[in-house]
Length: 196
Image 1 (tube, rainbow, N blue to C red):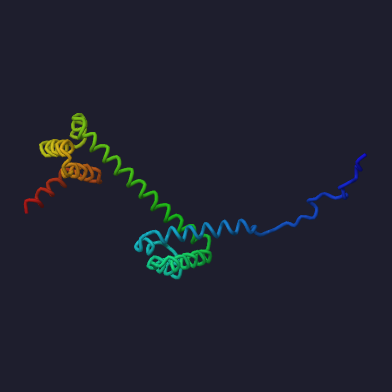
Image 2 (cartoon, one colour):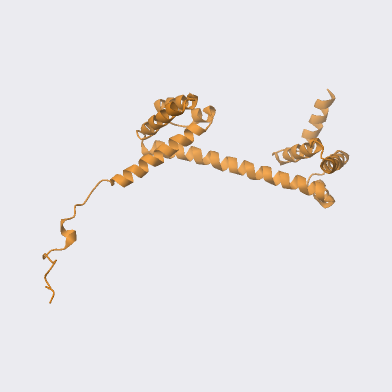
């Protein structure tokens, strides 16, 4: 018959566990890795953008220096150094840097989405005459003859596999219409500039 007291010592196993007030080694390593990646993101940005990020000069200098290094091993060591410098930053400084990077990503995503919307609008103009009617209803100041010529030339270019000159012009025209304040005055000004 098995002994019922075997393995029992008379105390709970959690009685002697130590309570830690500081983060675990794993947590510290995760934080260090996150800061290293943040530094690598900054290294990947253009020099002008890095100069606009709110951060201490020594960290900025380390990042700018890393961008200039072409040697693989030298760049790896400098990237590690950037990570070390990033760990010296205060939490509010890190938050500012992250906020700046996030705003850049959001802006570029918005720009890409706007460009894709213009491309779809251009394709719709080339395929459907009703899209031209809608465009003219939204922007009555446009030169109808010029737009029809561009659309006709764009269709011809696509059919004959020619360079997409008119295709690009339609895109630029739509892009101008998307700008705030674009209207008849801008078109008249452009015509005057071309005549001079």
